[in-house]
Amino acid sequence: MPKITKDTIGVGFLGAGDISILHAKAVARVPGAKLIGLWNRSQDRATARAAEFGCKTYATPEDLVNDPAIDAVFVLTNLESHLEYTKLALAAGKHVLVEKPVGQSIAEIEEMARLAAAKDLVCMPGHNYVYESGMTRTRELVDGGDLGTIVSAYVMYNIHHPEEVAKRYPGVVRQILTHHSYILLYLVGAPVELCAMKATLHYAEYPEEDIAMVQMRLKNGALAHFCASFAADDHAADPWTVMVKVIGTAGSTRYSYRDHVEIKPGLVHSQTYTAYQGSVMNEVKHFLVDGLRLGVPPLSTLADAVTAQRLIEAAEESIRTRTVVTL
Ligand SMILES: NC(=O)c1ccc[n+]([C@@H]2O[C@H](COP(=O)([O-])OP(=O)(O)OC[C@H]3O[C@@H](n4cnc5c(N)ncnc54)[C@H](O)[C@@H]3O)[C@@H](O)[C@H]2O)c1
Image 1 (cartoon, rainbow, N blue to C red):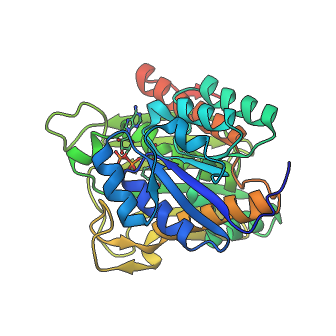
Image 2: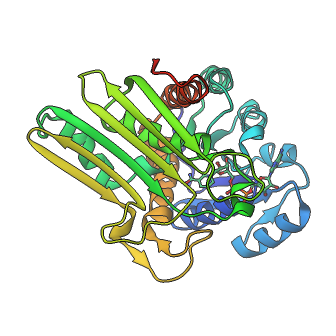
């Protein structure tokens, strides 16, 4: 893959919702990168966000992807439009960072991978959680055998989201268990079977689930557990706000959003979990500097996004059929 050597890597955003705020802060902190401009479906939001981020706006997504000043496009729109905009950017010869969940189906993600490979471009999933030192260190310990035989892994997420925010997303199975899935793949590998349950506990009208749990068996026989909840915050001691644990016969590890907390609201969170912005910062730096300048592959690839999607679809099947599903 050709490596970018020019002084400044130009970035463009398609979509300027909540997550664009974290990406704009991240790009601003990456040396040798600059947010050139953005496009958003509603012009009012585009203008407001461009003023906030200090960049220009484009009248159409085509104008943005065809601007020679732009080398990399961040697809930050809703899930249903990720394929459309990723294809548009890749066809224009631009590298892409596409937010998670990457696609609505395995076929959509595979189409992105085919196009990126044919054009010799990077198309990196927005799998931000794995770009944290606590995660990479756990992976090193697992790979090196330092934790002994892995016996269990847990990914827990308990962050209240009001109904009006949750309505912008699919239910927590797709929206949040996608994070859990790529984290598990990165740390200990894919499960071989799973069973799942979901419930809707606090929405008045929105029909999607606000809590889901999954039990899994890993290849070596170890067990794993996911919990994803928009239903309530966990404010008890040592809370499971976002908590990842890997336990082995010779050692264990923990990653927690609560290691760094700022007492001010963070987007839709009741407090600012510094790791949220931090993980996006690390992910963006990996994409722009390690990836585009140095040719280092993503820590979690489109192939991993396909496996994560397979896991999500298996969880949906298990919920639908009330059975254990083999992967
Ligand atoms: N990595 C993370 O931790 C994380 C966190 C939150 C959201 N996300 C992902 O980021 C993406 C955006 O989420 P958000 O929180 O910014 O949502 P948002 O609702 O705040 O913003 C979405 C933006 O997409 C635009 N949009 C919606 N439908 C569109 C369409 N069909 N065509 C073009 N534009 C359209 C809207 O105008 C809006 O500006 C989603 O894929 C979401 O899953 C990732």
